[in-house]
Image (cartoon, rainbow, N blue to C red; front, top):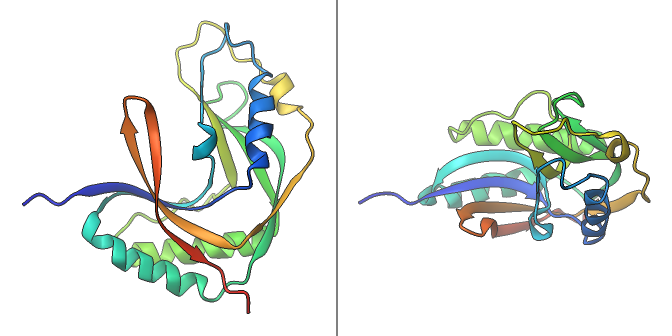
Length: 191
């Protein structure tokens, strides 16, 4: 019997106000000149660790390891305060919202989750973790070079939020696009 594989990742959910900032930022591009695949509002998140294709039977072990890691964490604050792109502004492929504030707690959480997931046989997270929320993807070739000047210099109120939970999600590519399913939500300790 074939094992069912789920494409999974661990993430932090975001406040609803991020959707309106993303919507405002979509207007900074001339849509007839640049083709951008914007992330759907309900798919916005902060990825902590991408696991990839995961046997459904591994989910309980992954959940136990996540619980073990987050049991040592109290809620902490993050701020969405800027825009950016990867790999660079000359040929961007990812448009994002940058994360600031308590990056020590965030990086520590990411590193501990990554270590736990590697003990289960999953790939270790890149050492150069840049916390961000992907809001758009640019595929090439493009007829015109994307002009990021307005996007990169856009002003909006900082979005401060408390990280009080972590989620294990699966993603599925359907004809209408990518759909995320919450497999489990884990609350950070209030103690």
